[in-house]
Length: 209
Image 1 (spheres, rainbow, N blue to C red):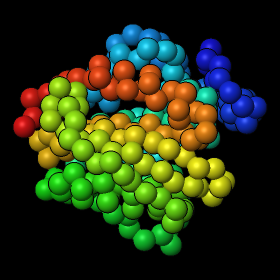
Image 2 (cartoon, rainbow, N blue to C red):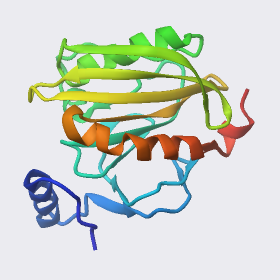
Image 3 (cartoon, rainbow, N blue to C red):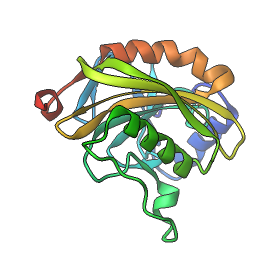
């Protein structure tokens, strides 16, 4: 049975519509250690919902607490050289769209931050986006970096976010949590920080340099 999502009626409606279509759009993530994308091991402190059909294409896995319109946690499970961080499925199906900006393994953290803001602007169709407070950070037990994001989407809701990442073996690993700033971001960012502190690289990612 598909787990209930906290929050708005909109999220519940989306859940019901997908159920009527004969598929379960979410699966329950319980508060216990689990591996994401065969690359990142994390231990959530509360129940999340994994999106079975993520709204983005790419080396990503997407979780949410209250529905994707309110908050989302995007895991990057090894973005290789020459691929975009992610592409919304709506844009991917539009032949008129220009090619998305891509990750390069030689990028430094500042260049990745700039790539990230360009990716947000393109996928959320907004020019109101910024990234701040770039700084070194330990990510999954390895040297990495982090920064904060702000953007306003087409729904005119201001959203805040935090990205943590590391480049290992020429691939980008990390996570980005974002949510409506006035309530959903501030409410859950402590949980995200704790989960980020629990993260470890596994498999190929763990042995990469």
